[in-house]
Amino acid sequence: MPKSYFPEIKGPIPFEGKGSKNPLAFRYYNKDQKVGGKTMAEHLRFAVAYWHTMMADGTDMFGGASYDRAWHAPSDPIDRAKATMDAAFEFFTKLGVDYYCFHDRDIAPAGESFAGSCKNLEIMVDYAKGLQKQTGVKLLWGTANLFGHRIFTAGASTNPDAHVFALAAAQVKNAMDATLALGGENYVFWGGREGYESLLNTDLKHEQEQLARFFHMAVDYAKSIGFKGQFLIEPKPCEPTKHQYDTDTATALAFLRQFDLIDHFKINVEANHATLAKHTFEHELTVASAAGKLGSVDANRGDLLLGWDTDQFPTDIYSTTLAMLVILKQNGLGSGGLNFDAHVRRSSIDPVDLFHAHIGGMDAFARGLLVAHRIIEDKALSSFIDERYVSYKSGIGAKIMAGQVGFAELEKYILEKGMPVMRSGRLEMLENLLNDYI
Ligand code: XUL
Ligand code: CO
Image (cartoon, rainbow, N blue to C red; front, side):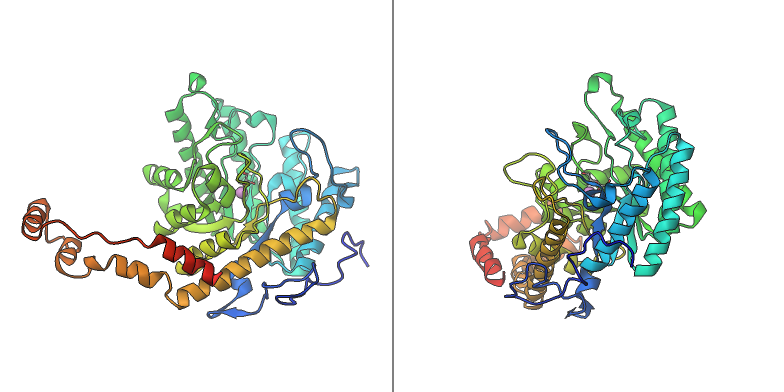
């Protein structure tokens, strides 16, 4: 028997249904339960974020590690990485998720040199291959950590130094190779330090062009190695930089269109990044979806009273319901999924807390899925929205839609018909209806 890092968890977390008193059971997430033609697992495509769940040690701005993870004990970096990966796959299978996500530097330690880092990554990709095969757990997406090392302080692809641009390119090349080798279904670009602190020392136009140039190189490289996964941009307005270039979904979409990259990318919407951008989660999902570009989701939440990226596990059924409404309406996330880019609190020091956190997040989304599905089936909201826009189906509205009238004809129409009659938006009624479903 290999060493167990979660000996108190015996088998896969069971589904026990609503009313269960077992804190280590699902109440709503029932993997194989069909919801409108697809199983819950197929709808939700949950993934564990390696960096938070396996690598975090509770460190915050004011203090060091608070969790004591047995898998971090080995002193040799590769032994430690292997122990961490053993623990990771034990966690994935006991939790019952099909996917995980990583940064290159999560699964493999940086070496003394760039070549040493690449060697370490190769070793750990081989190791991951074995564990994926053994367990059936798959890679939802890979990415490169272009923000942790001090060399990236002034940006990676947007760095004023071309030598740093080259280093970032070399690192992404290797992270893409790793993602391809492990069958990753997507590749994510989150612009951690691709932004600026002050315009006093920044050529913004140059930096944005470099970001685009970098993405074009990534597209070309993917083609050259036969990587068919979906490229995703993950917008965030700030943190670590004061102003990040991929501020929000609308900004990222405009950027992709401006630089002729739109056909190669979709958006990975993160809930807490949305709220930092002063948007709701569902706003970002809807903007991405309306453009046909909602590719994947980093499922977490912020804290209304704290202004930073707290990356808490999602627990708000209201929010998960609104999110699942968008996802169901566009018929799912395709190759994307719901990645728990979330960490337990500094005081949640035990490995079992990782189970409680993920069980809560998975149940919150499963419940959101069930509620959203019923709302859609009953046309509870869509019938109201259809009716609200019905004037475009006939008469002058149909003529507007068909491009048959312009300003002159519309002035004539108004002079003839007089002022429009106002109609209520019925928001309070709809909020009550939503609560009724929840
Ligand atoms: C940071 C963040 C990242 C990305 C991947 O806010 O969300 O973890 O998801 O680099
Ligand atoms: Co994220």
